Image (cartoon, rainbow, N blue to C red):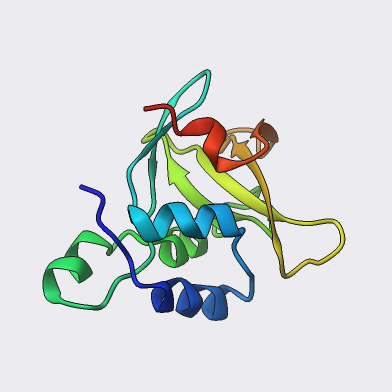
Length: 133
């Protein structure tokens, strides 16, 4: 169940991963830290940001973006500069990648990363395109 998030937890994750998340993504996550997205081919569960405000939220956010990204990077073919933001439950992830201009600033574009091939495919220009549910 999604719930609001204090921006300080996004900042903590940005510092941990060495990236800056896109503003639209941060706004969506501050309103609902988690939730579901839909692409043309799949349904996705968004990873939350780790919320340490109380025991219940710690429990609800234990599969957070930082942890899931670190685990995904253990696959040999996950993009080295990718950030995992969602899962389809079958091993694939939605990922954010850095802008061409700044390796520390993530682009608004969202990609599917296929765990079997290591390929990425753009599925949206911005998170709002995947939020019609």
